[in-house]
Image 1 (tube, rainbow, N blue to C red):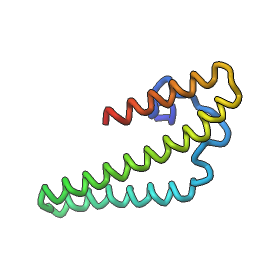
Image 2 (image 1 turned 90 degrees about the horizontal axis):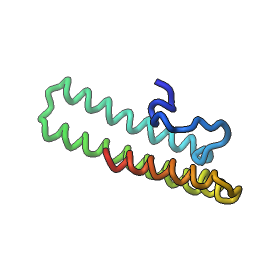
Image 3 (image 1 turned 90 degrees about the vertical axis):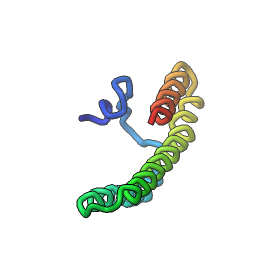
Length: 109
């Protein structure tokens, strides 16, 4: 699955510098920690850990992903949407629409 497919069929694949580029290493480190949490969930199931303990870890993993998503959204607004506003024209409407759809997807989860 491509990045565009994962984000939604209407998501553009814009080349260039993205809003998260300054914190890329920090983001990758954070995602690796989340990946470790997910592996921990697999291990817990494999070891027949009590279901409530697994659910507690699921909640923690979900919150970690939500927090990451909010940080990425903030960076998108500060960089991509703000840049479109400076350039003017119809691009700002497209960027705001794109951000609104991303927020709607986050709220559905």
